Length: 360
Image (cartoon, rainbow, N blue to C red; front, side, top):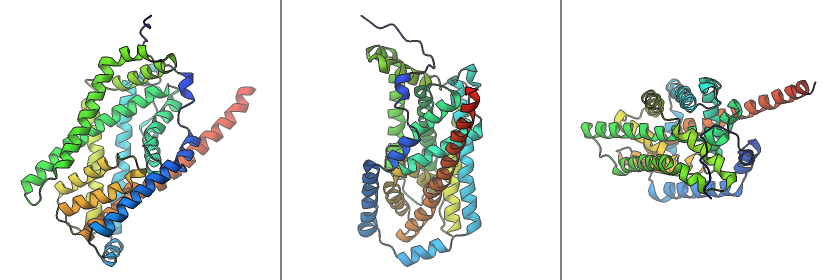
């Protein structure tokens, strides 16, 4: 007998609640054997690259790092964290479009709150394997709006799709820029990788729309509601009128990240064209999708090699990547970790004070 179609509503699935990632899950993943293995793999690859592939002088690298202009470095740091606000504003628009929490999205938290959740999600991605932070973001939005976790996770997926489209647009602009300047050759693998990522995500969204309901009817009952909520959250995040401003917010966020990389190079006195900066910063972003904590090992090695292809010396490339990673990775671990601890401490305290009041 065929199952009846399920209405796309943002309803809780109590069976899926048990697998929602919480703080304990995150701590277990950070301290888990798979995380340790991925860190060892990343460190091994990076160590091999530094030992056998790159030719540099440690003393010169250290001299470059010590010579960083502090004011320009802090400007790069500030621009990077301003980008979180624009990402939060885009996520708010996506969540409202998907009607997360009901009331036409009126229960969606403010931009600053969502920016903080994004930072905590990036923190989780930076310390745990397999991009656990994306699931954490969906869980946090579900808690804030009293919505189903799969629906909220769908908005994160929709944001990732828009992110890759924005990256592709900027990669193409960067490639054209570099070609016009004529000083360097555009590495084709970056452009191809961007097209592939967008293509794969687009095909996934199309399949979700075309085959979603039919697939749901074939799933066991305990997964059916969760899948339909996920489909609802993902597809309903896209609205014809909402996509252009959301895409523009994403592009602004990436331009701020590109500016971060530019000012890090400027702080070190390394002359590099803005076209190359665009290409390198966006390649950095794509490399972070590799499921080691923060893309460790792959980002450092890949980005260093890319900068060398663009004409930087081994020493300059390694110095620049090392300093930039103090912002794009280490600072996220520091500030995101602090926010994570404070955020959940406040939540626990609030819950403990509300519980006695509810019992009266």
